[in-house]
Length: 281
Image 1 (spheres, one colour):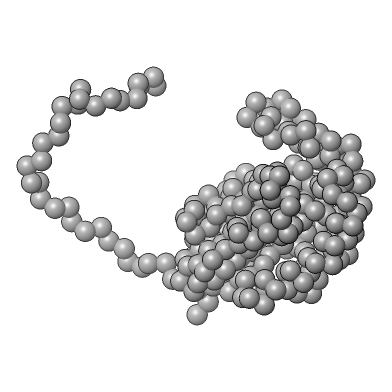
Image 2 (cartoon, rainbow, N blue to C red):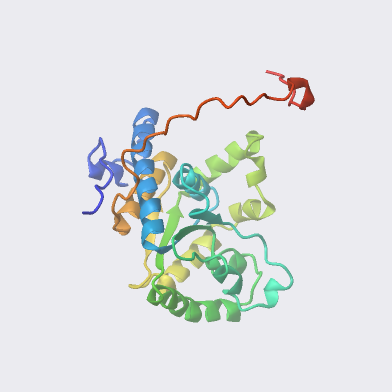
């Protein structure tokens, strides 16, 4: 029997983006309760992936500051990094620039019993690389021809591929950029590329529209996440991911800790023989 899907305290339609919900933030108490339930289900999904030897790749794309990273963190927060890992590739090296374009992404694809979350992916070619002039138009059109077939090959091999696009209004994106400038914990997120993207909203929109026209296929569709409300976006995305992969609850039942063994006369070394971290607090 398949595992029960997440039991929400709210009606399903209330979790879906709608004209009425765009400007209504999900309350923190509701968000935390919902997220906890979804994360419990993610643990079940993780164990099922490992049990069945599934290979799952989830792509997170979208606007800068749209909330991809925050969603990925909530997905992986309570999962085993040996089963569920994140692939966030840096700028390609000089050697990687000479490889087949998809080559450096292939080595990060999951093996049996693994799920990989791509924080950006091969879709860099149709987005930032194109808009910022890091590739030629010929390379972009070669990508459009190759990408659908590349993904079909992955799917035919048995890999489960899920693609999410996080969509955010320009006003909300600017609000988040401004918040990053003021927060020393988030300033590292403002790369020169992010700053430049603020000036190229229309170019990124046009690139995204054309990318969708070639890569939003029946075999490998794009799922758009309304990300104006970060909390709502995280709940919707995780809920949807759980709904796409049928799974059963194979987590261990009735776990009990064995009784501790009797004292065997072990004597600890003197405490002053070890070097401790100073207790400042």
